[in-house]
Amino acid sequence: MKKETLEAIVVALQEGCTPVLPVEEFACFSEEATAGDAHKGPETLQAIAATLTPADIPTFQRAIRAIDEGDLAWLGFKVVFDSQAAVTNVDNEVTKKYGQQGSADGQPLVFFCNDAKEIVASRPYSPRDTFQMKDVTRGPSMHNDQFDGLTWASEPLFGKVRVWLLGASDAAVEVAALANHVGFHVIAVDYDPAFLSPERFPEAERILLHGGNFTELANMPARPEDYVCVLTRGHMFDPEACVWACQNGVHYVGMMGCSGKNDRVRELVLEGGVSEEDWQRVKRPIGLKFGAKTPAELAIAIAAELVDVRYRQRYSQEARDLHDAHLGR
Image 1 (cartoon, rainbow, N blue to C red):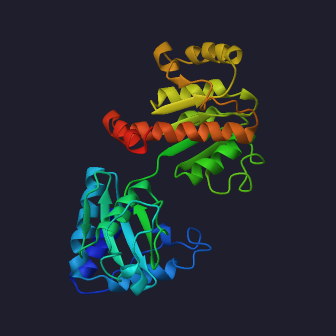
Image 2: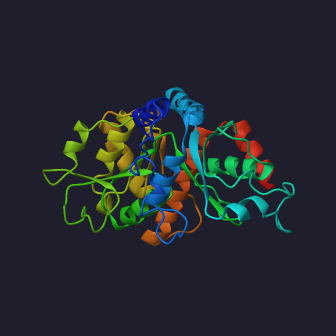
Image 3: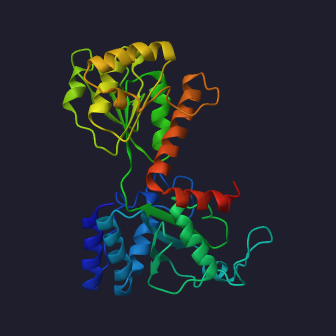
């Protein structure tokens, strides 16, 4: 989400105009994200934009502050397709009770919610609205179609974690699809265009190296918050990939391979100028341990580990303990 987009919305509302909510910025309403959904689409976003008034300015101002502060926060949308059902539908007999009222009203709403469960909205909301508004922090919400007459959507105000896949191996192809699906920005790197093709990596950013090796990788900067998966084909360029990840000080780096191969890679990595301390930061073998063998199975293990690393990076131990206690773990 671009701060400038939110600032332009605020200016439009201050001037009494209908703001522009670009689908590119509010991707939860894109054709791709809403395919097969009868109640959400690009036209829904424009209909919601037309309902906004100066009363909604504080919602967008709070979103701007969240971006400035690096807060884990979302802009959420209540989408109403049957006003009467949205208001009169009461809780079912299975889930927790939230009173005898459905939604507070039958009108669409844009609201702010952060991970601390702070809500900012232009109109009052019912206890059940509160339940579903807080649920956007699961991003996207899990209970968005639980009740009749309305549904929900949300857009994060923070950027995606970048995952570098060094090597266009078959495992990398599988990891790219899964990592993209669970909300990472995937960057696939290789020197062979036949392996690093749009067909193999349709949703990843692709970087083609020259010279038939990974030498050019040294000229590319990574960010401290990035993740790196070393998945070079045949493990031939694992040492160069590990050296690059360690020298860039990325948050996470993992490498495939058995202990025997890793011992030789260690020697080459240390020869490349990496300290033993930094080498020990390399997770090897990469991925959660549960008996995965095929590229697809290995990708599940790797993607699961990426999700776990991201969870631990974003949340304190106290917050994780509370989450586990809430789920009865």
